[in-house]
Length: 405
Image (cartoon, rainbow, N blue to C red; front, side, top):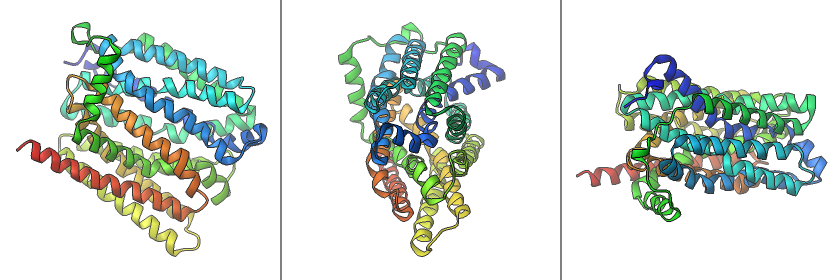
């Protein structure tokens, strides 16, 4: 039953904006300081592959703590988990501003990563607390639409902040962003998981819930498929400094040339997903998304293989199409995973996030540094991720069909 805050159009849009803002914490934490990579490497005296580990130091704790945010919200409510997460995230961001060494910066990035996922994970459970069916798909798509601005906005804002004030000011901006979200959440975010529906707060029970979700065959297949679909785009986001500086020859304030096509694709895909909600079967929409994704990724591989220099505008078109595909697929797979565990949506949202972030961490921390020097190899990595996602999704569909017989 929708709460009062979600019953009106204004409340619906306000909730979507707040949930999208909570989801933007992670892309802002990843993308904002991309333009400062070269300057930070020089200040700390580290190589580019070492600088890449500022992403790994963020992503790995993000993945592991995400396991607990959902079950904790099932036990103590949605609001406390989000508010405490934002408070600690803000403190970690502020600590990054004053990091005296590269090692301390990595440590403070761990603090950021360990708490940044609270809003995104619990926000997905809030969507399912309030809405079902086409309404849930529309809200998830609206959140994705607003959220899609973050990857393009973050490096642009970060580039101008770096040029004007230096890289430490970028982390001050993240601290201010965390503070603004914490205050807004305290004032506006409803509690959608009342005491009578909560589970007992116990570590053993939290682990048991997460283990039960992870052991579900269809869930695991869908979680991997969703994560690999995003990896098809995320590889390019992780390689952004190499692409923008080395391959395209642009400056710190021109990251938008890479991120705008991605965000444009996300926006169109999320809009289409919202409009298609209730009009076509969800899995048919996912099939269309996969078709667009595998075609775009495969064409990109062929272009890089056959041409000495693929025009930048053509590379942007392929990124745009991959972004559309991702947003046609991701909301459908996410809602299906949550529906598999109606009594433990928080645990399901946590485990989905954990799988997605482990895949993203491997992609950014280990695979991207190996292939980012060659755009053909980067295209192959993206195509392999999307093709594998398609195969896993088809296996999951067959598994679901057999279990329903």
